[in-house]
Each structure stands twice: as C-alpha cells, then as structure tokens.
Image (cartoon, rainbow, N blue to C red; front, side):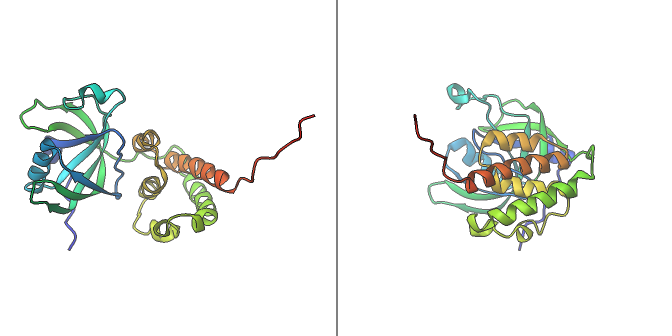
Length: 226
C-alpha cells in the first residue's frame, strides 16, 4: 500500500532536513533511488523514517568541493520527497526511494543541532501562466516530437500518454517529462525554478527538439578541397 502523502504545511517546513548533492534535482512526482552511506545522512534517514518521511534534495552550488563536509551553499529552490521505500543494511547503510511531492524555497538554514542540515522553507506552487493558450500548443508539439523519438527511447519512456497518465495539471505534465529527459543538472535546476507551466513546456519543446535534431541529423557533408 502506498504511503499517504504528508502535507507540506508550516509545521513540516519549519524544520525540513536537506540532503545536499551536486548533481541531483528532484521534480514533483519523480522517483529517486538513493544509497545512503555517510554517517550524517544515515542519521538524517533514521530520523526521517521515524517522522513524517519528508526531506528536501538541495543541489550544491559550484565550488562546494572545499567545504563538502561542512555547510556549503545550496540553491534555494529544492524538490521535497517522501520516502516511499526503505531498506536498512546490517552495517547501517540505507537504500531508499523518494517520490517528489512538491517544490520549496529555503528561507533560512537552522543552527546545527544535528549531524545533518535542517532548514526552514516555504512551499512554492505554480504561477498562473502569462499566456495559458500556449499550453496546449506546446503539449501538441511535444506529442509530435515524442512520436519521432519514441522508438529510440528506453522502453519505459516510449509511450508519452502512459508516461504522463498521472499528470493532472500542465505543471505536473512538464515536471514528469523534465524528470525523464533532462540529464544536465543545471538544466534541471533551471526547470525546477521556473514556476510558469507554459514556460516549462516551451523549454521542454526546445530541449526535445534538440534531441530530435541530433538523433536524426544525417552524416556531415564532405566537400573536396580544391
């Protein structure tokens, strides 16, 4: 039985654990498997599992390497996930699976009272699109592009209708596709921070068009040198 989704209310967000990583962005509705082995994140996982099972995946900003074991800067916009699967190994390591449940913005980092980092955050929802009429236009374009790419994608991604079947809003539709196609962490962070669903869809059309063009581009033409 699936875990009920906890509420991202003021109480939950007043002391929200964060799991900072350099190359990971969690979108709402996406799933993320994690292998937890560092002592501070074992402690985080243990406390999360005994509580509301919520934590935020915060992306580390460039230049974190020199202070990785400390509190290097992270991007303010994060994806919050609920632990929906967990397995503890005999040596204390964990395998967990997160399911994204929303976006939050970090307001402040709380004093270090635990091994791991904790923040106060605020929930961030989609904003009304400046031009909602563009939403069906971009969705139609994505459908056309996906039709070309489908046979060349992993089997789990080939059927666009099935992939987005649980997306009840344009924003959820965009987030589902972003999680599927954006491998570059910087692109993913930009998409996470964009609150206009129509703009997220436009950015996805742009990216999927690039993928399509690269896939179907013919061999470069060769000209003889005179």
